Length: 202
Image 1 (cartoon, helix red, strand yellow):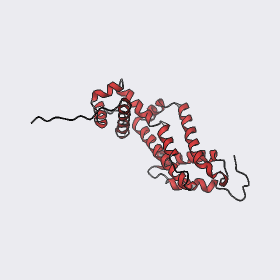
Image 2: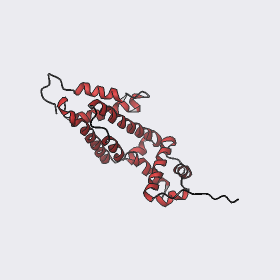
Image 3: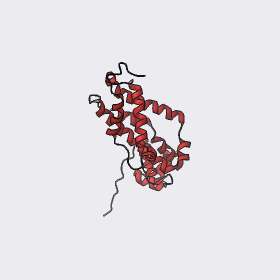
Image 4: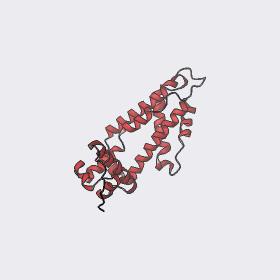
């Protein structure tokens, strides 16, 4: 009896590109940038030749995978999805957990590709713009509690962002990052409105 293999229907171009990028990023995080196109193809579930119908070279694919780790859209989407009807501390814990996952991934990527390659691939202007977008998303989460804070929501958001990075950075915390709930507690114990502070601070 002749066995007939059934190949999966080909993905649309955008989905194929996204699958290659996602698979490459996972491999780079696990093994470094010297992964082979064969490994990438196997991880993505495509033929090796498919890679070169989407990307000119393997380096181009690796660069796209590294860049995807910094794309703000997925992060901003997660922050936007945080339930605004929950108490301030609950929604900020959810936001910090999202930021911690991103921070951990970024520093795993630095370890995988090396600091020099990381810096060469980063645009400092884009990094500044991404930070501004993240802080605006945090500001939006904090804004409904404005009347209970000593600081303006934008400043509270800036402090939360900085505190999260400091308490998650592997070079600072080693293998013991501060829990999201503790980060939020540290922030709110400092910014909740106090009787002696009649006006919010800038």
